Length: 351
Ligand SMILES: *Cc1c(COP(=O)(O)O)cnc(C)c1O
Image 1 (cartoon, rainbow, N blue to C red):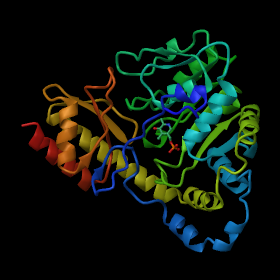
Image 2: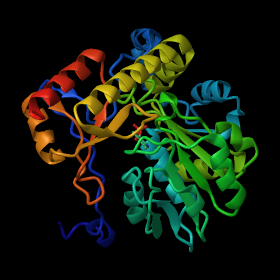
Image 3: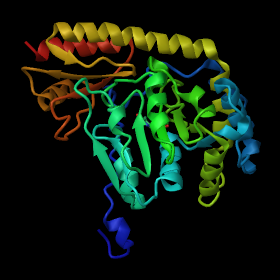
Image 4: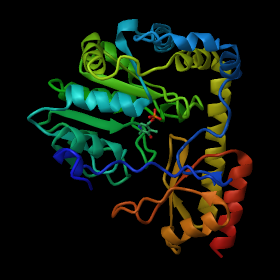
């Protein structure tokens, strides 16, 4: 606390990201991809002329947006890019959700959303998850100044299909519905094809997970032209150049390699299902997942203690110390070898 801080800054409760440890651990705590990015990314980095760094990047990141537009079969003007999808989300909260009526979100979802609400003075209302830990789409239709949820949801892993979300959009048409698709490539169904039918639908995505580029910081939003134009107004009132020229070049290279992308996500999905079955035999309850992580709890062992036991064995997972999630651990899907180490550690800990 400092007297130099603005009053609002004293009131903030910042988001706490998962730890990035200095020691060598098996890192299963922040849902990074265990496989390297597409080989073309490394080539693009090697080929990048350092002299180009004298110049500002293209403020509109046009080649990257065009590559995303082609990938998702939308127009260039329907694509917005930002410095990680966290930045895209922050700009979207400011652009769309500062309304009289409250923002609606599930009670358990990406914990950054309430942080943005506090930053921008947005009132919000949470809605309890369903009995299968699903986002209660039918309850997100009350009076609102916007709706947000992750699909598949984090940290629960459950995802709704496109038709179910279209049903929500049929009932919410006066405010923006933001669907955060950070994990969709690991088995979810994208609602991007719905943007042509619903001008209030904004879909966000990231290169951090399924493209193995968390360190590059690239995220995007897809929606109607009017939504994207709104985001650009705010972005251009804040930072004209959120995407550096190296990120533009490497992002394009990542999108160009479909077979690498498919191979990596299939490996993650296969490893996830194998791990899920094995964890169940060790007495864990494992929620079904359409993501690159598993949310698990053990009926006999305390999650906080298991977290510590794993850490002592060089394995880092995520434990959220909140009322609703205290009994659970969230485990990112690593390589097969990493997951074997995890399972061995659990075998020792849960004896
Ligand atoms: C990881 C994650 C993000 C943030 O992704 P970045 O592009 O790395 O900022 C956004 N939403 C959800 C639900 C996530 O899990």
